[in-house]
Amino acid sequence: MKSYVAYYRVSTQKQGVDGYGMAAQRHAVERYLSGQDAQLVASFEEVESGANNDRPQLAVAIQLSKARKATLIIAKLDRISRNAAFLLQLQDSGVDFVACDLPNADRFTVGILALVAQRERELISQRTKAGLAVAKARGVVLGNPRMLEARIIGQRAIQERRRAFAALAIKPIKEIQSTGVKSLRKIADCLNKRGELTPRGQKWSAMAVKRVLACN
Picture 1: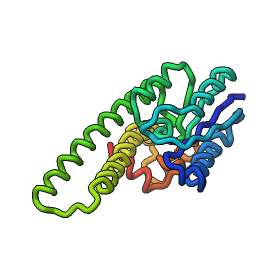
Picture 2 (picture 1 turned 120 degrees about the vertical axis):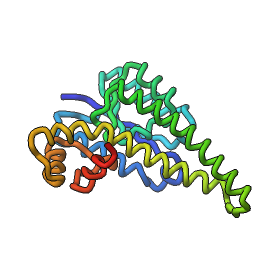
Picture 3 (picture 1 turned 180 degrees about the horizontal axis):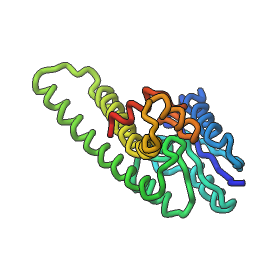
């Protein structure tokens, strides 16, 4: 029986108090482990900003994973950190880990995704600031520029994560297509039977398959 240690994180105190986000993460982990010969040794929760890499609960989770020779499991890769240096440091700790939204990712691909995510975050910030400067020069009333900037960065970050997921999800889809299965609905059925999950930790649908194919 394989052992797992779960780590859940939300970025705001309100999310931590209300449980918003935590429940969804726990559900994703439970669904990932269901049907497997696995046991959840322990779980840890943390309310911490993504910009802060000081995660005491994560440190305890890593230590326990080492002691029990368990796999650290998280619902979404960005729950650990969007900071590439921190994620690579986690990899160097020697602890095996898996993200429910990227089950096919290994240490090598996760490292690449982390570097890409950090670079994209830097480029988004640069493009957003340049766009705001141009708009301001034209006399556009921006209202709260920080709110607008945060909205733009958030939307582009979501798009980047979707592209990254599609790059990984295309492999099992191509494998299924190679067997002669062409229908989007049948491909989705095959993915569900294999236990694959969508970026939101849901079962596959024909539309979800279509979106991945459109990105590749």
